[in-house]
Each structure stands twice: as C-alpha cells, then as structure tokens.
Length: 266
Image 1 (cartoon, rainbow, N blue to C red):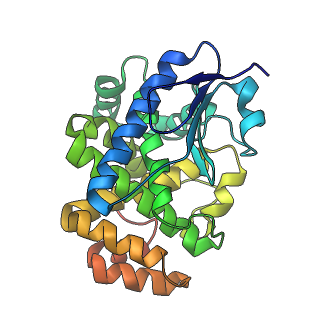
Image 2 (cartoon, rainbow, N blue to C red):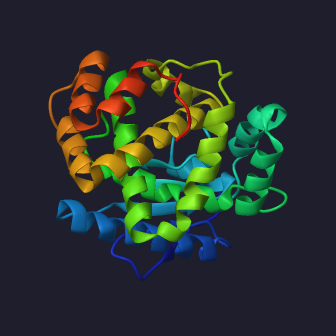
C-alpha cells in the first residue's frame, strides 16, 4: 500500500493514490458540482470525504469486494483510479448482439476502441445521491429504492447542470439494457445480491434503473426527486408497496418496475 496524498481546495477531504492527483481533482470537481446542485434542489446538503485510489490501496480504504466499483459509506465515497474489469465484462456481454448502429454509437461517444472512463467518472454523482436518505438500510427493497433515488439524482444533475454529458451518461445505458438479458440474477429483489459477484451483473441492474429514472425525471423533475426522498426517509416498505408508492409519482415507471426486466430501453 502507498501513502495516500491529501488534496486541498474543496469543502470535503480528498485523498488519492500517488500519481493519480489529476484524476482525483477531476472527480472532486464533479463531486463538488453535484453537492452544490443538490443544495439548490433539496436544501442544506453536505458530503463526507472522497477517496480516489488505485488497486493496491483499495483494501486499505474499503471492504467492498469489487475493485473500481464506486460506492458510498457512512464516512467516505470511494472511487477507483484505474479502469475496472467489470466494464469490459458488461460490454462483452452484449457484443454478439450489437447492431452496426450500436457499435457506431458506442465508438462515436466513447472512442475507438470503446472505453467507458468518461461514463464511469459521472458515477461519483450517483454515489453522492445516496446521502439523501439513510442508505445503510439493508433490506432488498430499500436497496433497490435507494439505488433508484441515486440514479434519479444523477439524472437530474446531468439534465440540469451538465446537459452536454447526457449522451455520455445514457448511450451505454440504453444500448446494454436494450440488448442484454442473460445474467445469473435478474429479479429486482436480487439486486443487492448482485454486489457479491464481479460487478457486471450489478451494473446491468443499475442500467435498468437508469433507463427508468431518465423517464421519471422527464415526467416529474425535482418534485419526483423530493417525493422519492420522502419515501426512503419513511417506514420500510415491502416490494409491492414500494412500487405502489412509485405509481403515485410516475405510473408508467411503476408499471415497468412490475414487469422488470421486460421493458424497453428509454
């Protein structure tokens, strides 16, 4: 393990693996923009420290088993400094069924060869969305609801504050969800269990929720975000009751949650 480098200039601590200062600053800037946007949308909002670390330092700052998977903990947000293997697995999962148009779109947005680093860099904003509710609740329904809220916050932030990045965020989400259905775990109630594997199955779940939250943000905007925050800050719900409550916010999204994963990409 290397000694982490502390960076200054933000309203939260930032620690990076040596040699990764430039990426650390970029991710910290993104985190600061997201926190500032949420302050405007929901009121007083703060985040804990940010850790942007290489594979050799991962185990020293988190117990999360999959290197490079951004995640939030009570006292820190952890992001990988190096490209994570699960992104390659996700792209490989759809490679045999991609159309020529799909391949051209992926190259246009993510380069040739396709690399998802520009997409992955946006995910710190998703992690920040978890601090809108008591995300440490561990039951399966609260888990997927919490991920949905974080995705809705990410969608709202990009739509309102960085619309030039919406294509970067949504292209791979739309293509992978539209082409891939063959995963060991597919039921929405199993999303939490998917974190125990290599990360690729879990990413598929997130892509499904991101497709839904794109539509939810379009239909409800910040009012929908605040209502979903209230849901997660309230009593723990059963799976069916949670979808009923979402139905009061966006009936179309609730209908697709009931037929998960059999709904088209947005």
